[in-house]
Amino acid sequence: MAALLEVRGLSKSFGAVAVASQVSFDVQEGEILGVIGPNGAGKTTLFGMLSGHVTPSEGSVAFRQEDITALPPHERARKGIARTYQVPRPFGQMTVFDNLRVAATFGGGMTANAVAEWIERTLAITGLTRYADTPAGRLPLLVRKRHELARALAMKPRLLLIDEVAAGLTEQEVNEFIELVRRLRAMGITIVWIEHVIRTMLTATDRLMALAGGQVLALGEPDKVIQLPEVRRVYLGN
Image 1 (tube, rainbow, N blue to C red):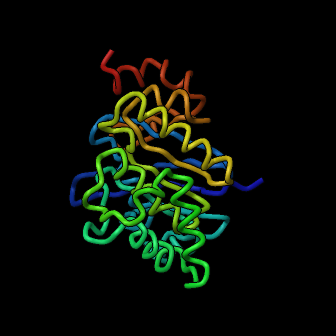
Image 2 (cartoon, rainbow, N blue to C red; image 1 turned 45 degrees about the horizontal axis):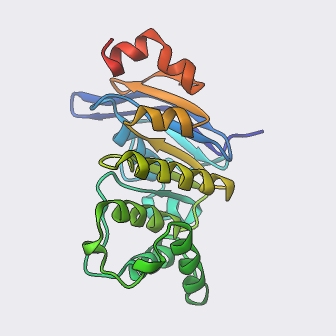
């Protein structure tokens, strides 16, 4: 069975600086793949190349067996790829509902008749119904993180790229996000999740990929990957 996402030999250099080098991996449909690595490991650049915001110097990205390497972000969004950002980027003066309307209409390509019902469902899934009429710029941290996730979900993705949503959250808030991500997987959404909170990656993912120096250091079962000496040395410093 072909993978939902197939990444082959992705590399990216900015001048003489290589930030990604020959990155290859697959993501199966329905899987949660965690991605870890120290600062500068190339995690954000990888997400940029998967979402179309960064053009690779080499390599290819295939989604549902179609080569999408040359496609811009909006075309990838229409095909079912959505991403969040570590620092939420809402339209601050617009309400939560209207932010989701923009995402569903322009990112997801939904018709006006279908948008409202889908947004109501997305608000309920992410626990944001009570904030529907609140300007996004006034949301507290946890709610802003949920809103960032909701904006991505509003595009009806098949593949969701999550960038460090647990950063800055309490343990209870992290647990809430883990449960939310699990619900998304149960809805048929495949997830690639970058995170620094190791406990999150060990409890919420099916496989774990460790990056270092822009390269894949290890890929496999989370408990086994985190115990590898090279991963502990690079990521944990021991």
